[in-house]
Length: 320
Length: 145
Image (cartoon, rainbow over all chains, first blue to last red; front, top):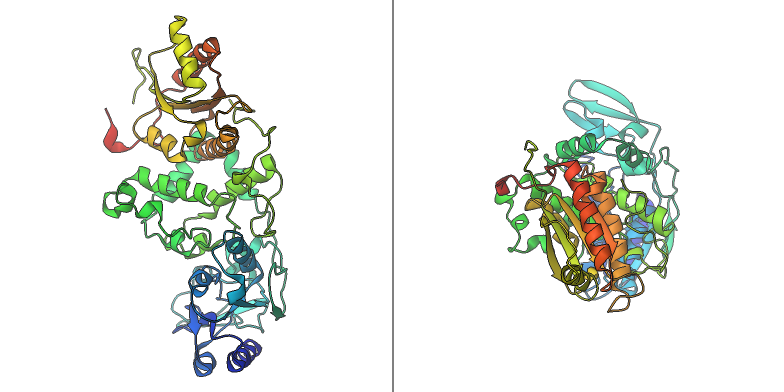
């Protein structure tokens, strides 16, 4: 962490960048938040990079691209896909960003640690990330494996290679230990009744807080359809069970082919809804029908929903 | 909702102005029968069909939704139906994933000369939806009738 602060300070002092986009310390180890830093003193006092810095900073670069001067932004390997995708969509000005690719050893989810009265967590600090985490609680210490506390997305990590950067700092550890589409295949194999019951149970938890939309780097439209007062979905008080389903289906559809599977939607959901299941279903279908495609990996590749082939699969193929 | 002897499915058909709607017209002027349960909505091009249209149709009580357009390669706007094809493939796959049976959604390409195909398609689709029974999965509770 010190080397990140050190490097950021020297870039600020040299005038190469005028602000730094990073993570700010919270009251506890785990409530870090994305923040802009304009002074070296602020950086020194409040900058943090630890196991809880899961937040993807790419989306904040849309606003930063409109400001004067360059912004130093820290990107983890998976965040660099989102950044690339936003460049492709002309939402970010590459010239306005100085990118430091930071190493990632898997990010943690505080809900997974879930110990009564947590006071602090040892082992989540970067770069001393360890195999085990020691959780200090009101009722004594508790040890848990680092892997058990990781975010879902880190178990299906896309790789530790930065897709775009100006310089790299820090080491990474490969955390991938699961099949990305295993869960999707499991749901696909269910009967229609079971599928519906599963999603009904998950989506009925939705409180329409819009956190998934607000955090999503692909959801960056200036005007969102879900803010339109013409739809019931904009008025949360009126929202019925159907509107919740529609919100999630349409939101997933709007980012289909552009979603990099960064997993931010599932990370921020206060109700713990596995929202990545929607996006990943589209990714799985796109991969199998239109060829392997990873949004954000290649700026020049044709996007699946804005291109076509004369011999694409028919929607009726293989249907009951 | 119990399925009674007299139950009739509600089917929404999105037909493109240039081919399928004219195909429906031809079916009519050729005196070919297709079930009255099919309500046709004319769209300028199959590409005009927003995924929201399909979901809203189910919300308002449709039991099946079918989209018809020009045959690939014959689109009045050259390529609209190619894009629509990809979109609908993904959307219908998603609906299936959420528990809305495959049989309730369909895409067919019907040209202006295919009145017979239009009527056959609608007959078989209505038959299929009838066998699946009323759609309860995406209906809005407020829209019961």
